[in-house]
Length: 79
Image 1 (cartoon, rainbow, N blue to C red):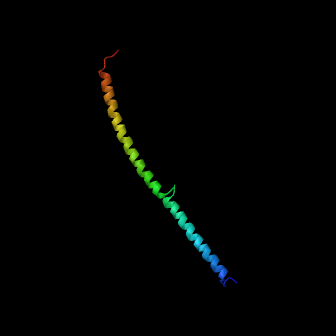
Image 2: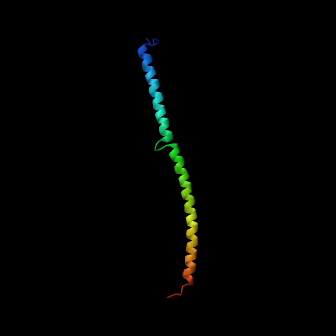
Image 3: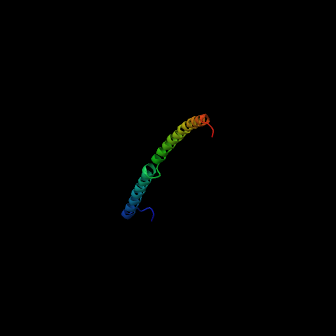
């Protein structure tokens, strides 16, 4: 009974294979181009590094400005 491949069984197997290939393709496309994709992760990782570098440079600039401010404040006469 199971050794016989009828036309109906061949069509069913073909449909299942086709469905599996289409579904796998859809899932792969979501993985690489979707909202939670690898591409999005890489761009966010790059943006994080850029923002961290900007934070460091702004902290250095802030420290210099605070130093200048306190030096100028000490030069003012006390009231």
